[in-house]
Figure (cartoon, rainbow, N blue to C red):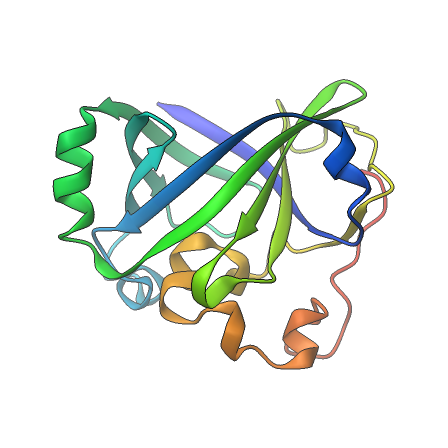
Length: 181
């Protein structure tokens, strides 16, 4: 069983673009919907992803936060294309950019379609309390905000968010910003 430990942040400038060492176009969809997962009727999200010329089946537990169970398996591209046609809701389109910053690799997701304008940076860690340096182009942390989970972007895309939601404020109006962990 795999455990993914990942922190997610908003991107506040384009300074990262000059540091990109690899980029992949991605299309991903879900075989279950966000409401079933949020209600507890289902305990995981089931994702199909085309990433460049490869495809993957991914299952993540429904926990909110930095640590979740994750199972990830390669798929034949033709199978993934057929499964994407069976997905609930729209297929997300994004471009993933890879940037190294100090001891960590950051993945910057630039979304398209109904999620155009949303750019989120993620860093995978070996422990929840692992220290890491925040690049200057990273802003508020959104790890614990469900609306930033890709599964939720299929049913409530960035294009319909309020200004407060886009500023990473939670339901109490408190900023989700974080300093270096």
